[in-house]
Image (cartoon, rainbow, N blue to C red):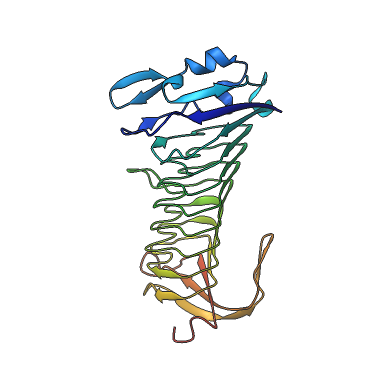
Length: 269
């Protein structure tokens, strides 16, 4: 696989929108051609080389192209937006919308990621080794359907509305989540190994949500239907005893959403 290395030039003040940092766009291009790809900074169109030093040339196809971003770029948005193949490795933190509408390939963020990571994702793998912001795998403003497929792995914490409108795929969070994770979820799987604050699965009509830690405030539209030990959901095997709920009855009289919550951490529920 051919590598293209991008090194950020100094500190970026105004956000840069860089959908062109994408194996599909880089494929078949020389170093000079990649340097001249256009990004947006506010109302200005500028070449990529204004913000990055570029080394290497791309493969003949996206699947043969690996992009390595060497440094923190929290003010660069839309990296890997809509990518279909290839790899992106970010050796630092990423800005908003990383992996949004991703179809295939893989992105690894070796740090934190901003809000809207994996928005309306359809395939591929997005792995964030640090923390993520709000709206991971969520539906965009004005849309009801979020992530359709693929996998999002977050080793740290995620903020609010994780997987909003989720229609397929999987999200795994190694740490905690905040408010309204899985809101309007209708399919797919979300597994949170830590705690959740409130609104888990609010308006959920399908799919499965797992919280291995404590839910501080359970949504009122969920009803317990017993307990399960070491349940298996697809290829995911959970360890321990879980209270199993259905919901959200606030949305429908016959909801198909399933919520598992650790029995040990939620004895008072």
